[in-house]
Amino acid sequence: MTTTEKRAARKIFGITICSYTETKDEINLYWLGGLFRKRLSSDAVRIYFFGIRIYWAHIVSIDLTNSEVVEKQSQLCQICALAAKVHGEVFPKYRRCNKGKDIVLMASGPSLDHYTALPDALHLGVNYSFLSGKAKLDYHFCQDNVERCYAQVREFSKDGCEYFMGYHNSAMICIPNCAVDSFHAKRYVFYDPRAYGAYWLIAPNIECMPLSCRSTVALPAAQFALWTEPHRLFLVGCDCSNDGHAAQIGGATEINVPSVIQEWYDLAENARILYPNTEIISINPVGLRGVFKDVYTQSFLEANPQTVQQIKQLSSQEPVLLDDIL
Image (cartoon, rainbow, N blue to C red; front, side):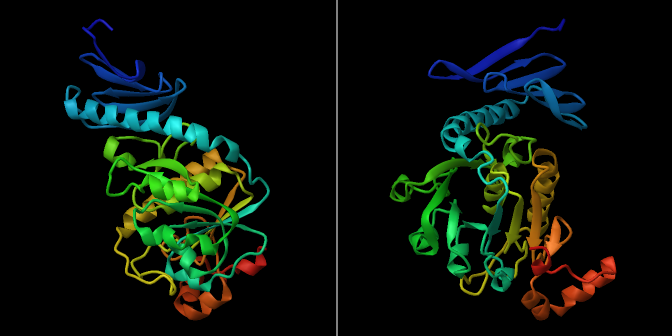
C-alpha cells in the first residue's frame, strides 16, 4: 500500500489475540494469530480462514475510521480466544465419535408430544425438554441461568450422560460455576454473531470457534451433534412457533419466528457443505417444514389433519412416515 498505514494490537498475557491495520482504502482485522482475517473496504467485506476466502459480500458503504467497528472486532477476538482455549479442551474427543449412529435432538415444542423414543438412537436434550419424559438423555445442553433447567435433569438422564453448560459474557445468562461443578459439566462458549459483525453461520471448527446462537439453545446443540458426524440427526420439538411447549413442560413462548427459522436455514446451508455425510431429518416439522427432510408420526398427522392437506397441495404426495425410514 502506498498510503500511510496505522497498526494496533490487543494482547493478553503478552500474546497477541487480535490486531488490525488501517489505511485510507481498507481495514484488515486479524485474530487468533492470523487464523481469521476480515478485510473491510469501501465496497465489500471479505472473510479469510487460513488464507482462504470463505465469505464475500458487497456493501454500500462503511466508515473505515469508526471506532465502534474496531471495538466490536476486538470483543469478537476476545470471545474467539476464550472459545479456542475452552473448546480446545472440550471438543476434540467428540470429533466423529458418533459416526454411523443416529442422534435425536429434542427441543421443547408441542410436536414433541407425538414422539416415541427411537430405541437405538442417542438422545440430546436442550434446556427443559427432558421434562417431557420422552427419552433418557445421553447429552444435555443448557444455557439458561434458571435453576429449574438443571435441577431435575439427572433423573431424566442415562448413567454417563454428558452435560454441557453455556458461557456467555452476560452475567444474566451465564450459568454459575457451582452448577457446572456439580454436574462435572463441560463449558462451551456461545455468542450472537450479529452483535459482532461475524459472518460464519455455524463454526467450521468448534475446537477453536464459539458456537453461534442467535436465539435458541438448539442451534449450539445441533452444531455439537454435527461435529460428532452421526449418520442421521433427527430434530424433534424444534417447532419454531409461538404455540407453547410440550404438555409436560408447559409455559408460553414468545420468539421472533422468521428469525429463528432463518437460523435453521443457515445451519442447513452450512451443514450441507461441512457435514455432507450426515442427513438432517425433521420429525413432525411445523415452522421448519421444507428446511430439511420431513417425516411424521401417525399420531401427529391424526391430531393435525390440516398438515396432510397442506403437504398434498404443495407436493401432490402423501406425508412420509417416520416408521417408513427406520
